[in-house]
Structures are given as C-alpha cells and as structure tokens.
Image (tube, rainbow, N blue to C red):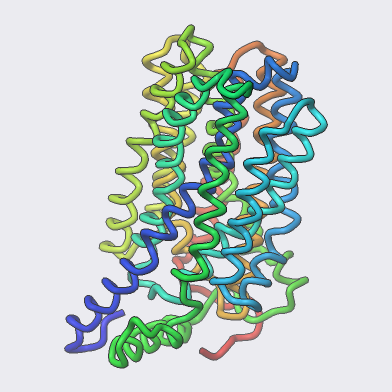
Length: 438
C-alpha cells in the first residue's frame, strides 16, 4: 500500500526488504524440498536394497506428513513466542541432521522411523516463513513475494533430481551405496544454513537496523493499514479456530495442490522410469516439469498482484491440475505423459502465491500464526500423507502408475468447487468472531 507522494520511499523500502530476506529464505526452502523429496530418487536403488514394495514405500514416505501435521501448529506458535531467527534455525538444523541420518536406513521399520522424525523436525518451516513474511510484506506485494519464495519447491526438483541422479552414480565409493551418499550430501548443507539463520534473519521490522527511520516508519504504517481491514477470520480461541469453516475450507483447497506436488515428488521418478528410462535419464526428464513451473509461477504471482485479484488466479491453476491429472491417467506413452505432468506441476505451483495471499488476507493478527499452520498442516496430512498412500494402493491394485492419478483428479474438482463457494461474495465479507483492532 503506497503512501501518497512516497512511491520512491515505498520502492526503496520494499527493495531492501525483498533483497535482504527473500534470496536466503528461498535457498533454505530449496533445501527443505530437496531433503523432503529426495526419497523419490533414492527409491530407485533403496527399495531394491531393502526389499520394500510400492505399498510399504508409500506408507513410509507419507509418515513424514503425519508427524508434520502433529507438530506444525505448535511449531508456528513457538515461532511467534521465541522469534523467527532462533526458531527457523532450530528447524533447519534438526531436519538437516535427520535427513543425513536417513542414510542409516536398513529395513522398513527404520525407514518409517526416520521419515516420521524428518516430518517432526521440518514441521512449521513453510507456515513459519509465511507468517514471517506477513511481518514484513504488505498485502499489495504478498502474492508475488510468496510466489517467488515458493519457486524453491519446483526448483528443488529441477535442481535436485539431476543432482540426486548424479549422487546415485557414487555407488560403491567408500563402501557406501549411491543412495547413502545422496542423503548425507544433501542433508549437511541444511545444517549449515540453519546456523546461518542466526546471523541473516531479523525478527520484525522494528528491530531492523538495516532499514533507516523513514523506511521503517513507512513499512510499519503499511502493515498496520493492512491489519486494520476487516477479516473473515478474526479473534477467537484456538479451539474454535480449528473448527472454523473458512480455515477448514482453505485447508481442503490447499490439499489439491499439496497432493499433486507431494505425490508427484515421491512417485514421478518411478512413473517416468516405467517407460524404460535409465536412472540418469529419469533424473534429467523428471526435472523438466519443475523447470517450467519455476518460471510460470513467478509470472502468475506478479500478475495476481498487478491485477489485485486472487480468487481466479487460484482457481485457474487448480483447473490446470485437474485437467492434467485426468489426461495423464489416460496416457499410455512417454511424451504425452511428460506434457501433462508439466501442466499438473505448473498448476500446483502457480496456485501457491495467489492462494497464500488470499488466505493471509482472511486471517487477523491474532489468528494468522495458528491459522496458516492449520491450513498447511491439514493440507500436508491429506495431500501428502493420505494421497501419497492412495497412489501406492491404486498403483498396486491396477499395476498402472498413470491410473493411480485419478483420485487426485477427483479431489481437485472438489477443491475447485469449495473455493468458488468460499469466495462467492468476494474476498471481503462478514467477519467470523470478534473484530480485532489493528
């Protein structure tokens, strides 16, 4: 939100904020998704070594989302209490250590335990950063900033898949299998970034010595003006927030994109390899949809902010997800499958900037920490925990990697209908709960 006659100050302030925080947070988030999703590439060797079936692997991969769900809301509340700098550092150091320790997996049980611990360690990072950005980024900039931040998700697969494929080629070095090296060498950098958080992050604008007085005043004023606008979900006890219809509907909407992204990150390498590709070919081709998604999600977030519209900028990517999933489930050859996977992942990631801007705008100051965490936690549990398993069950029952995508396509249609009903009166509407002053 601009202050009259102060466009230069606004531009100068936001440029400083974005360049100070965003590149570092993007690198951190990049490592989060490399460490979370590298199990998909590791499975090309690990499943054979350990003797895990598709069903067992799917269950183990999904346990990440169960512990993530359990720990996410407490983690975001802790971030508010202890400050982003310390808490985000804690999250990254612990998840980096657990990710590296996944190299110790030797049977299904140890795989289950370490995936569960990884989810608990990483829980709260994504909603914690979304909460942190709400302390720094006014509403008028939020979709583009969130889209740019979340480009780390597809970038993780774009960068991570070829790197993971190359690390698998280290098979036999120092007596370790390639998938052992994959987990170790992709876990250690996360620990180092966690330590760097203590020096790179500032909790809130009021403490930012790298902003001058005018910049700090403008930013605090813009954020206060945003907070003063009516919210659909205002002040209420935590127990009621978990049952609030807006929060639950937002969680269902987010589930469709979370399910598409999480399921493909785990299963897409095996789907592609089923067409007779080598491990290295699989890693390279697996990166293509993520490269396209990385570019288009930034464009879509900027377009959403420029047009000041979030509803249809969220719906259109969801329709792309659903259409791509239906088409992929019916495809029987490699090229059409890759094209449709591109459509699904472009939709899944273009969705994120407009959606999280819309969700943040619905939540008041007192509900935003727990609200964002609740939406993200439920979406991860259903989208990542449940649907990753559903994919494995359907694949085992039908023998088809493509047909296993059909339940995701149906979920997407339900989510589209939910969002259209939730926002049918526009983004502003009656406030649920006691109105909160800025």
